[in-house]
Amino acid sequence: MKIWSKYPALYYGIAVLGGIALFYKFPYLLLIGILDKRRYKIAGFILIYLMSFGSYYSLRPPPPPPVKTKGVGYFHLNTIRYYHMYGKRIMNYQGVIKCFVTKDATYYDLPVSIKIESSRKRPLEASDYLVEGILQPTGNGYHFMKKATWTPLHKGFNAAHKRFDMKKKLRKYLKKHITNSDTYSFFAALGTGEIDSKYLGIQFNRLGLRHTLAISGFHYAWIIFILGFFLQLVFTKRFTAGILLILTTLYFVFIGETPSLNRAWMAALIYLIGFLIYRSSFGLNAFGVALIASLLFDPDSIFQIGFQLSYSATFAILTFYPYLEKKLRFLLPKRTFKQACELTKFSQHGYILTSLIRQAASITLSVNLFCFPLIIYHFHAFPLVSLFCNLFFPPILSIALVLLILGIIVPLIGPFFLKLGEWYMSGWLSLVLYGTGKFRKFIIYGSLDPIWVSILIFGLALLGLFLEEKRYQLTVIEAQS
Image (cartoon, rainbow, N blue to C red):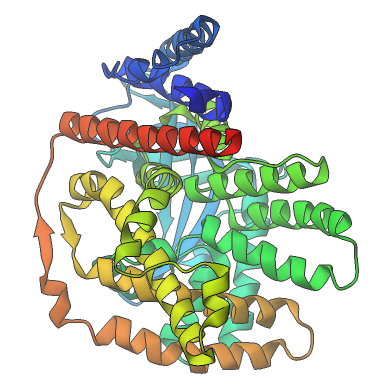
């Protein structure tokens, strides 16, 4: 395929992913590598493919305990989150148990969460702890610990505590200026990247909108746009890009590591660094770099739902969207610039609206087509109403996100923007949370075997690559003519 000369990072990212998939007896990604006719490219792909498999095979820790087990472990803290459940404020300490010793065996590198029902029982601030309790697997590679006792080991620097305290201050600031509880929970989720209201999360999940609350490339793009707009009023474009590089990294540290945020942050870094060194970046190349970095950092992240949906949705937008957007033009035609200028003012507004609808529909169809097997596998249901909700809600969310950012960064009049955001979002949230009950009945229920899910995703990925190959060939022909 000729696109590999344009997207080498994607090519080798698939090789890294393929080597890990080979460990689980899924060798089909090797077929993508041999689609290139150049022998040195194929040799490089196979070498990375085998190195990825060998590294994962040799370094992967032994399987975790299959049933709940009592023992003592060395716990390294990564993130502290909290949420409300049944009127209680639950604190959730997430991290990795580096070594867990039981009566019968010793286990290593176990992702675990430990819940604390009251902030009064919060252990002393530390980076690592000696924990003792009952470890129970959740069935998806993760574990939670019951009846844990904590012993702080040393007070090394750990951003988790600082991050938790900063998010607590942000929530307090939002709570002070936003009186509506639903609107506060919505803006707190956008600002902190954590959904502390279980009700809000459940309702958005039923409508297929939960991904809009998770910090992703969509949110990062708006943050860069808004901050860049104000910074360019004072600084040059290149100096602004340098400042944005620092600010986006600080924002990444503030929110904490998640699969969607990792990918969005790396894509932002690639774009900004490319601007600084006068190099343009391609979406699929940035996607490949983020994929390689994520898998090198945590190969087992391929089992996380967030990782699977985030990377699948991004790949679908980059490959399927241009094709579907072009096909939908027969319903909502795209006019040339000259034709648009000849329209009346009213018709121009209508043209802009139809263009936005066509683009939103193309993105929604692309993402849901690619992610449908994963959604059915993980959740056993697909809300059809999400196809409609994802058409109108992202533009609404964009305005809310602008008001939230202005409410946080603009001194003195920031509370005014938050009040404006509360007035703007209260009606929309009432519609989403309480006015769509009848439509939630339209749900597809089902289940899929993991093997079939893998085959379907592989087939859709091949289709996306062939669509991209076709566009690339047309671009070359047009450039030569």
